[in-house]
Image (cartoon, rainbow, N blue to C red; front, side, top):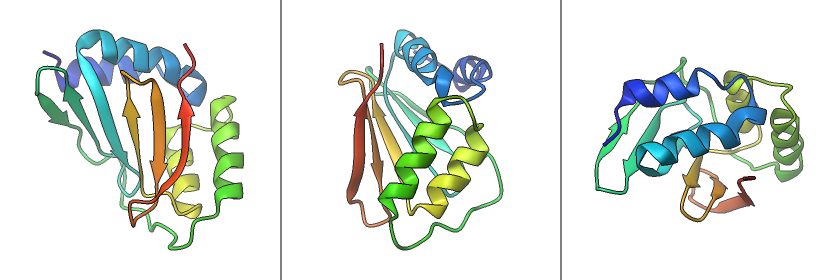
Length: 129
């Protein structure tokens, strides 16, 4: 079983989206199977293979999620983040501006899937090994 402190320690090593694959691997080794991050406040719920779960506190004051998805803007911002050009908070602000409500990481399938506030799948990608 994993703890929020262990997850936060692993996350503290991530400066941008460039380090995300290493973070995903680290939390999977702890027993996390999926996690869901909410753009509005940066909180994340981590779900374990054994049925356990922990939720982080909100990371910042709530952001307004733009009601209309701008997929082109979002994909540009995502690529920028993955290249190491933005931190977590800036990426969340960019997601909010692009209409992204949350993302779900499935560590078994090695995917990260982004959704709007209606639950519509906007984009899914494979997590690099």
